[in-house]
Image (cartoon, rainbow, N blue to C red):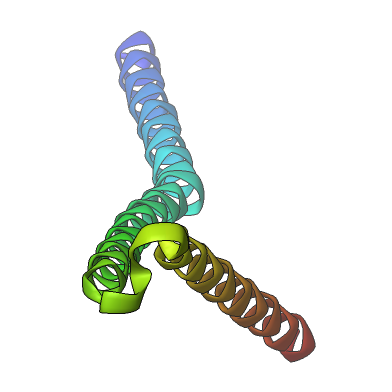
Amino acid sequence: MSSLVDRLTERVRGATVQGQLDRIKKLFVTYITDETVVPLKRVARFTVWGFLGSFFVALGELLCLLGLLRYLQTLSWCHGHLSWVPYGLTALSMVVVIALTAKRVMTSSDVIRRRK
């Protein structure tokens, strides 16, 4: 009778230890998922939307500059020896847009640093 009780007790202890190990494993996997996978997914989503936004803003700026160039080429004083002026003004406009964008980015990053 004693051996039967010992075997049953051993099974209960084994099941309890196995159950605890399963709970620990589940807790570990949940913790790793919450602390690494979820933040990485958020960063990836943020990065993808940032790249898409940057691409479309750049495309819009390019189309606006192309429209400016075409408009300047239609002006009557931009023919002959002044045919280079539309290209120069468009290039100057592009440099101004890039400078304003860079200034805005630098200002935004300074504000973010000050908040921390």
